[in-house]
Image (cartoon, rainbow, N blue to C red; front, side, top):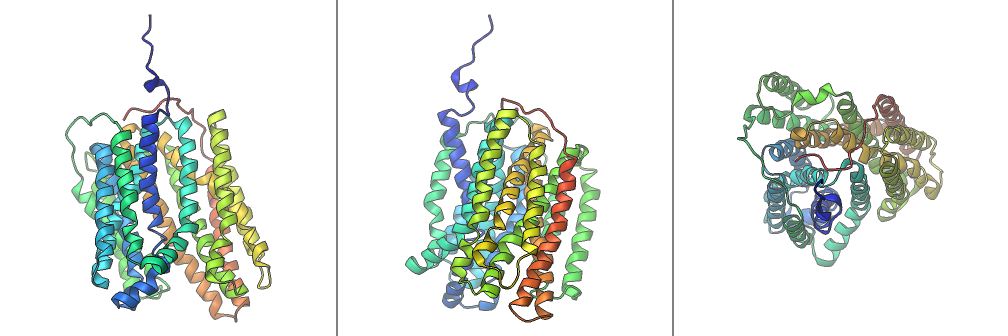
Length: 474
């Protein structure tokens, strides 16, 4: 007579698992929120600490540290205990947050933001890795829809929360507020996440780590400075790009000969894995076009106040959340996902086409409705790129795969912001507001449409694979 499994083993969402998921998602929310909460506090920080010319580094240092550390955290979670690595990243993030809150100078704050960003890189990839091993693929779509909600709330609520905390209690509280939520994350993870220990001796790819971090740092700095601090053909930008290419070339050479590489190239032998990276890069590029340049259009072409321009992104956020929940239910009911990134890419293409039609006299409320198809498309793409990535690799490569996916999306945001910023600035120099603002938005939207069509092409080649009803081995 076969042995009957205990309820703890047959139910994917036991009370303990729910607590663990809540802990992981709260950590992910902290990492997302701190990407956006600081922007509205920058003038107050500069007035208090001085160094207004360096204040953008408060954001750049955080983003740079996330980009440089995600792949390393992902690989460490494959080598060692995923739970321990996630808890370590939370501890680093909280230490960085507290130090940011007491920073006496602008230079110290920038350094502490980099430390905070290192922790945030582990929060983002670690939370995904923990969740993906707690629940089976067919049920993980539900978690992905919650992730989309957190992203939407961070995009809209981050700047609002930063402004409120700065006005009510001072800018230092945008960092102190992380502590109670971080402690809840620690408690939820300790109590709710129980994973078997890793077996075997870990071998760390030190050379690959150094080379990849060097390449990511150079590329991130280049995309951050192009069109803002330096011209495209400046020696600084050209030197950073050349250094990034050299480091990447050396990285590939080293990784092909390493017995336990930081980025296992065997993952790219699976078509779906490679296509998922294209989809992740593409949807972050188009997200940058929407989140960054639509508010500029509202403010500069339609004289909408900055606070209201952020609220006009709510239709996009609503479309994202609604579609993520609907697609999650479809995926759990049918076990099929291939059609979702196709629909998502098509919706993004429709949305960017709508943005191309906005004029200098378009009503802002009507213009905000272009965010509905954009949000719907992103809602289909966000969760499914993570799901496709997970299904395309062996359990031993899960952390490395999720880390690479996070890095790909981060680079998409950076490269998209740099390229779109150049197109937008070029249009402004050729005309007068508000017509030039609309022309700049059209240039950005046209480029985003090309990326959306690339995403649609890639989505059509994704293969359907069965979704398991039980978690994979850890």
